[in-house]
Length: 447
Image (cartoon, rainbow, N blue to C red; front, side, top):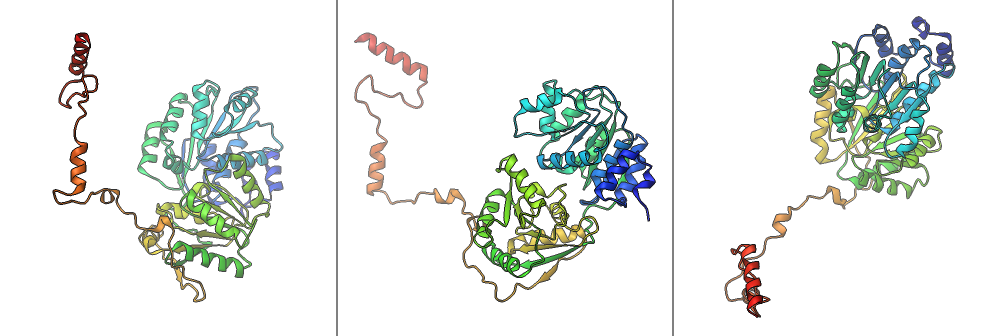
C-alpha cells in the first residue's frame, strides 16, 4: 500500500500528516506531487472531493525554506470567502511544526484590519480575487518575491465573474514564478488564460469533466411542485435516521429562506442556512456548528457547492435542480468523500426534466428514479416563483373605446393647453426651448 512516506517529506510535515490521520495519498496527490516538485507550470483537472488542496500544498511545503522577508512567497486564489477560511485551516494543520505565516483575506470585512495583518508579514497568502486585487492596487500586497501562484477552483472563479480581477493580478506579477492551476472542468475561457499567462503547463487529468463519483448513489423523484417537495423531504427526515448530516441545495436566496422557514416548523434548531445575504460571521458560525455536529443539516445555495470539505456528509438533497449541469457534479461531491459512501437525492419538477436529461448526458448515467410514496400529500398550490409570468406589455394595453364616450370627452378636454395669460402660456412642442424663453422675456419688457 502506498503511503505519504513515499514523498520523503520533512519530519515536521510528516508529523503533521500523521496527527491529521492521513495514510494513503489520493490519485491526484500522487500525480501532482512530482510535477509540482519539478517547478513546471501545472494544469490539474480533477473532479471535486479528490484531495486537490493537499495535492498542491504538500509539494509546496516540502520545498519550503525559511526566509527573513515580509511579502508573500506563495499566493493562493480561491472563489469564495468560505473556501479561503478552509484552505487557511488546512495550511495551519500542515504547518503546525513549521515556521510559516499564513493569512486569509476576503471581501465583506474591514479592509484596514487586513492591511495591518499584511504589513505584519505573511508567507502564504490565501484570498479571493477581488480583495487581493484591491490590496495590490493600494500597494499593500507586493509580488516582488512571489515564487508560486496557485489558482484553485479556476472554472468557478470565472463563473463568478472574476476574470478581470484574475487577469489584473497576473499582469502585476513578474514572469519568473511557478503557476499551479486546478479546475473541475476545462472550458474555452480557462484555456484562453492558460494560453496568455502560463508557460507550457503540464496537464494532470484525473477524470474527464462530468464523470460521476462512484461512491455516490444518485436517486431522483418526479415531484409536481415545491411544496410537495417539502412534504417529501420532511417525511424522509422523520423516518430515516441515517439522514444525519445533510446539505440541502436550492437555486437562490429567496427559496433558501422559504425552505428554512418550512423546516423550522417541524425541526426547530436542527437546520442552519447559508447564502450571500447572511453575514460572514453568521456563515462561518453555521459551518462550524455543522462541523461540530450541532446541526443536522444546512440549507444553502451554490455558494457551498465548491471546494468546502465537511466530514461524513451522509446526504446531499437537490430541492431544485441546478440550472448549469456541471454544478450538479459539484453539489453531490459534498458527500461520498474520502472513500466513504454517500447518497444524492434530487426532487425534479416537470420544468426541471430537461435539465435532468442534460445532467444525465453529461455524466453518461441515468438517475435511479423512484416513485413518490403514496402517503405523501400532493400540494395543490404553487409558490410565486413556480407560476407562469404574464408579460407586462399585455397588462398595460388600454381597451379601444367607441368615439363619443365620456372617456374620450375627458381625454380630449385634458389635451387643451392652458392659455390663461402670457406668463402661463406653454410653448408648443415643436417650438425650440430657447425661442420660447426669448419670447417670454420680450413679453415682460412690454409690461
